[in-house]
Length: 308
Image (cartoon, rainbow, N blue to C red):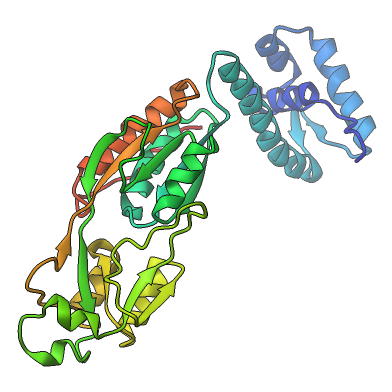
């Protein structure tokens, strides 16, 4: 890649000439001599081979090419300034990235709200979000490749802060044979029908959480796929209520009238990487995750104003 001939300082100087209305005013704003400002802009035009300014009376006015280039340069200068700010924040211990792994059953709406609120406070810190299923969250956290983890399990060796439970409900298509029994459904009834279960993304000791042991089962890779299968009449499953609210409202899915266990409420926990000190950005994100976890999913939410 060819090295740029024009420096950021030159672009800043051109912006000052335009924004302040002339070379003398720009020189005063930049605390430089007028001759230095004039030379900088003249040198720019020579290097680019394009006239950027023309003199109209006693005022410097942008040419058409100058207008286009100046607009593009503003973003360039802004990005460079943000990069310098990020370096300064990192020097003070501010993280460049927070790695968050979340069980796929955790409500996405809560994550979106927390991450939206985090953006204007992030100071350039990125969030790398990863979804796993069941023990997959634990493996990622124990392997040290996550800073924060949200899991529906107690992870041995880690102290997690308790979050709200997520409700799972047993559902099937309204025309499924289980619904046609027209009575309370027992464990024995379920054993003779196809169950849809989610594949554990963990590889070391994958779990069969929720499987009743019936010989007939579909194993799928995601909750969304499971919901699609069940809504198509292919078996029954326990699915997070927040994920299937629309299908329940529209009558595509219907809760099974089980004699017990039709609704499950596993508690979720927020864990931190115990081998890594918590930086300021991580601490802010933890607080936001907790706050929005405690808020009702249907509570009104306004995205925070973005700051330049």
